[in-house]
Length: 238
Image 1 (spheres, rainbow, N blue to C red):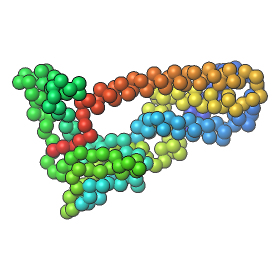
Image 2: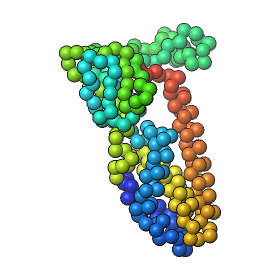
Image 3: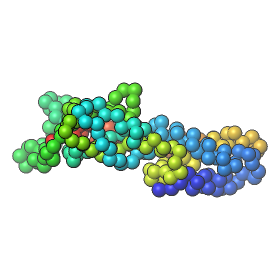
Image 4: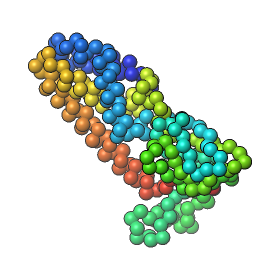
């Protein structure tokens, strides 16, 4: 974990590393750098909101398939468990020639069938399929309604409402995305600082570093995501 103040200090330190002799003192003031950092975080959030997610436990509305979690979450990334059920059912495809078929996986097991543990889940409320609701990033719809006689809790991965305004930033931003945030901020700052003649050259250097990192990072992440989506569906089954 780190804070926005930590990243601002690092950005100002990078200005020294770039050997900027003078620069516009108004551009490099902390309030302006903080504003630019907010824009950079917003840009990353637009592509990868999951990097800002945290795990929360929420109480679901009774007798309803439609669940609005907007009080606790700005955006739902995933439903981890509902009423203690945390099993993801493996996709089944009847056509073994389907390139998404998992029939080939059975050959890794002794009897050419997945072991029973893949289908064992807790007893209780079964939400079935769930899907995000178009037009509301913090509302989901379950296949089966929640019980009417008791409260059911769900563990969700979601983006909190104050994700971009709080000082403390998530580990993913402070670790794997740190250089991207800094390079993006320096690109924006050098682009608006017109006091020294070499600033556009510096801005271009940081822009190329930012775009190269982001393209590589997203290519790798989405390749892994594509492989994972072949293996699981958005299901929490008993």
